[in-house]
Image (cartoon, rainbow, N blue to C red; front, side):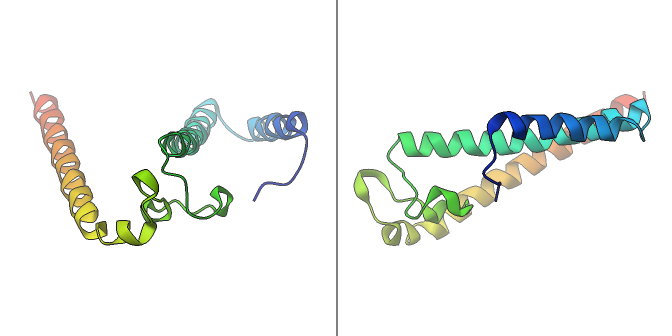
Length: 121
């Protein structure tokens, strides 16, 4: 949970931490840590934006959005459908998610194999 501090002070703390990290790292280390932090920021930003989209579509979280829960079953359904009705569809949703993830993994494996083949040429 974030402390209740003014936005300018919150931003300033990030600047201070950034400057502290500069002194003890090489340029490559700074680049690696910076890219890692940007990836973390992108994940948080994407999740927050998607939650806003869900709220806009009427799929408001059943509980408070401040709980930190990010499960699909914490959202109510279209037209006021309760989360209990959605739980009945969880298995189907889980299966669809699994199929999609398997397709993604297969596509990544194919791309890795293509890169390996191109490197061996």
